[in-house]
Image (cartoon, rainbow, N blue to C red):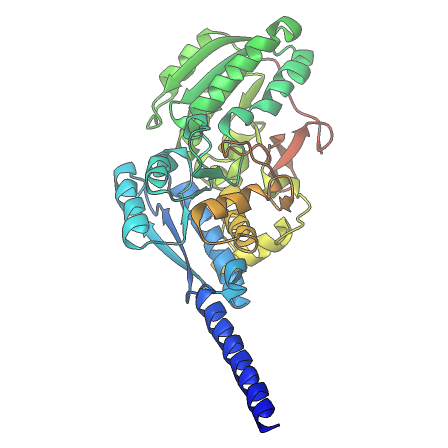
Length: 425
């Protein structure tokens, strides 16, 4: 009997020891949670791209502030919430400075998540670096078509469609609506960078493809450096081509200089289109003036469409939170929304990723395609990482009791006003 008891005790001791060893092994195999999830990014406090970069950075900071107030972002591999730490440097709108700082974020800071600065120009230097180092680039708004390829698995566009998709609804408007108002001759003036160059290429190709059906023809097509600030000579060249519609595509500084020059020249065209009167309306009103923007057609971003947000704040809640954090008089434009939306995509990816490996993060981001709907619209990706969702309607700055308001005019499903078009003179 004593021997049997000894044997049972021995067996029990061995079982306990085995369970203890298994527990130790499991504990040692589980990943140890870091104190922070480091999100590395750049911003431009000055220079040509500050107008789009700073709002995007502030939107991202707002997201980080909110998730940290809730104890951090939930990270699936660790099974817990972890605070977000933004590691951010000022690139001063310089691609050479940005190159150095992206390298620092990757090689020295060894951040967990790499977020590009706003816009195609400052993103363009991050794309090859991220690929070289095997780091997934959370590309906020570097939309130039040349930034994406099937061979590069490290670039994912988050907050607006690839540039060649931007003019899709503009082409439809020019070929379906404008001809009914005797607008058939189109002038294209664009800044020669990846962002607007890709849009201009898509615009001319799509108009050419529709010419036989619509009768719309391009009568002027000119690219100019992004640094261009004097548009008077260019306007005289455009006028000599006798266009009915003038499509100008540039960054905010280009749009301001062009629209001010157009207003001062006294030239009138049946339709004038520019990009940033819609994306950063308050900035353009302050810089160019209401008279220069009256009647201008533009893209309508999330701030003017009010998409149903199934994750994160809707546009009204976001605008209130943004002003609470940065001041009642701050502008709430597309780029602020883009920065916040970047945070939402990061949050969703971290909450579902199998690990913190960069390719696992990529898989998690791609799994959101067609399933994530935020204040920025539907998130939908192509195989090369280009964004296919978030396509913007066409709007116009029309007079109202407060002065000017951006109203969607096309397509009919979202239109809130009739487009105001006139014959050129």
